[in-house]
Amino acid sequence: MVSRFLLPLILWLALTGLAGAQGDTKLRVLHDHGNPVVSEMVELTIRGEYDLTVSLEEMIFPNSPDYDWIQIARDDWHKERVNGRLLQIFERKVAVFPSRDGPVEIGPVTHRLTYVTGDGKRAETEVTAPAVTLNVRPFPGDYRPLSARKLILTDELSASPGQLKQNEVLTRRVTIEAQGTLAHYLPPRPDLRQPWMISFTAPEQRETVMTDRGPLARVVWEWQLRPHTGEPAILPGTGFPWFDTANRRIEIAPLDPIPFGFAGFGSNFGTVDEAGSGNRAVAAAVLLLSLVCGLSLMLWRRAPMHRHALLMRLRRYLPSPHMRMMQQAARRNDLASLRAAAERHLRWLGLPVRGFSELDRQLYAALPPPGFDALDWLSGFRKMARSETRKKESDGNGPYQRTKL
Image (tube, rainbow, N blue to C red; front, side, top):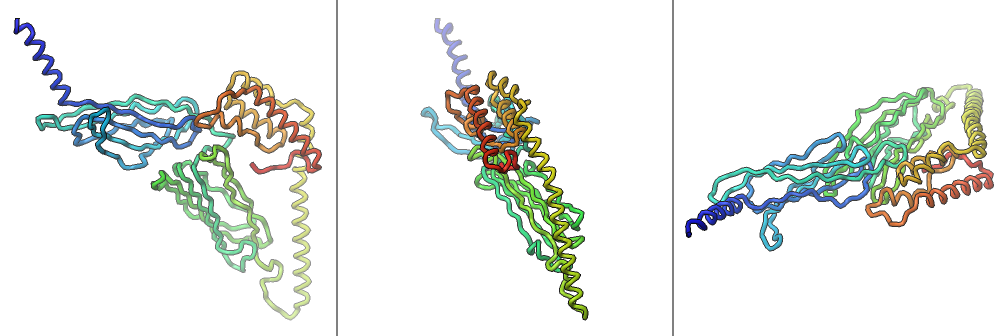
């Protein structure tokens, strides 16, 4: 009678002893970011709770073409009481940068542990955290994806670019630093070559530096520039769009245009000869000729803009080719497609791209406000576009001037 109950008791004691030797283990992937856009940094915390004495560990974080990732802090091992039990806690901080929109799956993540058993020996086990899915939004606008918490562009010139001396070389150094992104997301180096200028380009410096606030991406471009023909000119500027993750909107980092040329162009750089009055007359004639050529060039360049404005004016009386796409996207509540079609509609009308704050909150806010109606928003957006068109007409400036984002 006693033996009938003794065998199950022995088996139970053996199983519980084995479980106690290995201990309880739990591994999770935690994140609190909703609706990230393509290229935006999402911080993950990989947390392990182990009732073990861990001596060695190895974590396997899967690579994927759907995202880039980087560890952004040292691993944290500490003791913590969980549900009344003192456990060994492991935490690792990882930043993930989605490279496409839609559902992006991260994981599963496996932690291989070597631990000390109750009898002083070593054993191994694997703990796996299930995969998590990020709901990634398309990057706003038709721009190269670049998201950052903060971006600073510095443009340094070694001399006054419009007052260069004979044989003087201008050094231009442009630095972009972006907090919360990786170096390969920063824009490519702009091409500054012009037919009236000699340029030498230094090798690009591009790096990602780890800071207390996470990754800092930096790129440095440097050029040596010298006038080739000598006449005054303008070195064109450009702009680098980026998504401000703090304010949830597109910003433009401008690289400003600069005047470029020799000081005293047309005066032979201060040389003196006996026929001074003749030289002054020649210099004045050359200066007058350069002004006439410059004005002619400006008028020639403005002519296409006038033709463009006329075309934009005619478009006002034609149905927009993007209207149907906006209506269809609003009916099926496809907010990303609705925004893209609405932006193309404004550009087709020649209007500045704006009026998307309410829609962007639905697309990119971590907790979008409830009660949004896509059809109601589209109705208000169309009224805004018509009002902007009439306002530009009444101002007399032409409704289709190029505007800054």
